Amino acid sequence: MLQLTVLREQTDLVVAGLNKKNYKNAAQEVAALLDLDQQRRQVQSEHDDMQAKANSISKEIGMLMKNGEREKAESYKAQTSELKQQAKSLAEQLSTIEEEVQKALYRLPNLPHESVPAGRSAEDNEVVLQHGDIPQLHEGALPHWELIQKYDIIDFELGNKISGAGFPVYKKQGARLQRALINFFLDEAIQAGYMEVQPPILVNEASGYGTGQLPDKDGQMYHATADNLYLIPTAEVPITNLYRDTIVPVEQLPIKNTGHTPCFRREAGSWGADVRGLNRLHQFDKVEIVQITLPEKSYETLEDMSRYIQGLLQKLELPFRVLRLCGGDMGFTSALTYDMEVYSAAQSRWLEVSSASNFETFQANRLKLRYKNETGKTQLLHTLNGSALALPRIVAAILENNQTPDGINMPKVLHPYLGFEKIG
RNA sequence: AGAGAGGUGGCAGAGUGGUCGAUUGCGGCGGUCUUGAAAACCGUUGACUGUAACAGGUCCGGGGGUUCGAAUCCCUCCCUCUCUGCCA
Image (cartoon, rainbow, N blue to C red; front, top):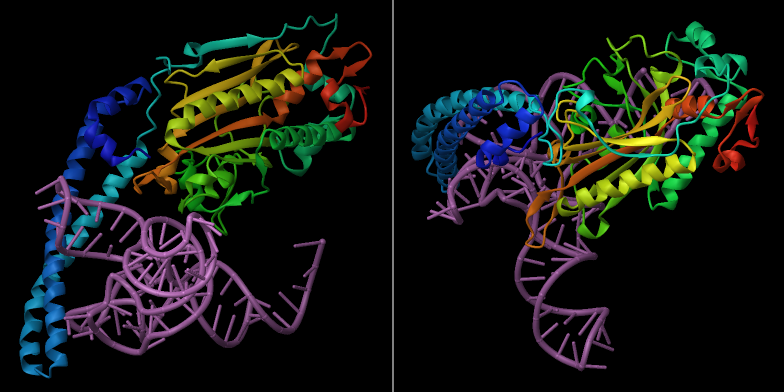
């Protein structure tokens, strides 16, 4: 959520930013919002005056009662009842306006960082770098959805039976590979100074709002209505919300947390031709890294996180590229996002395996996640996160890129975790 | 799931209708003393909103109500703890 003070004081910048994100009617909406805000403050101050008068009369009555001047006290009571009426109606107006302000604020996405390229769609994303050679596959090489059948390591049919499409069952070396990747990713993160946490994977509504999934992405999350809890679409939600409503002591910054969780996504309306196999699932595993930093450090931190993720991909010996997302393709809450894509050789396409973002104060504002600066003033912190990494597409790329006519070679770095070097 | 108890400032813990945003202790910060530190003593120390700055307003789990006035009374929801039951 954008800060009202920023909207007030840097209106032009806000409108320009929203435009870059392809937000429709930015200028009008911002103007309307500022108008509402103006109204709100007007009504607020009228209400407060009323309240102040009523308060002082009540105090007076209290004094009189104490001194035994009952009759005089009674005479004051009449005065307050009118004030009370007025204050009540103003309070109603106020809460209506506040609700509108809130709704309007929730609609606005985060502003893009100045380095974000303009653009409408994924085609306008900027390739920042590419690393590794595109593998040349042997004659008769298979896409991963056939490889997993051939070696009987991931079973979609079984998943269909017990849950539905998009819920694969990992078996044998396939299950072992999942576990190896999770452990590898967690160990690496801990090595890099992140603290491991195992959060709940069902979260309440407040948490959904805190990180911005609600109300924007309502309908994309599985909702356990009986208890009004949501299955998390990413560990970002619980891990960042650990710090909701907190003023973090400066000496504890930066906060670096990591965690593995399953992630659940309804993916309503996003099924198409290129989502076969592991490319898009309703449930998958991911290790997430989250950082909370001082505002002035957050972009440096984003670069660190990006480099860290690239390091993982290198260790896994996967060819990858890094994209800087354009304004139109970025997420609602992000100010700058890098996507990491690995090359999936049998599909001949790049697959997104990680997304690292700086949210600046957008989440922190909703989360009320703050610190006290040198002058003792309470200020919002910056939040960041990145996948490190999401498993399914990593698995797809490992399987496809390393296949040989007589088995699939596993990346060396995983050998100790796997207990085998080759599938098949 | 049933019965009971309870949710107050960073923590502990008073306050049961009136100058209570809240006694006190701990912790934190500043100072005195000290070569320095500890101890002791003195002072200070919540958040949000609002203002140029004051003032003012709001907040004692959430929401609603009674009252001139609510942390305190009533209703409702949520949560925690103890016991009983059940169970990975």
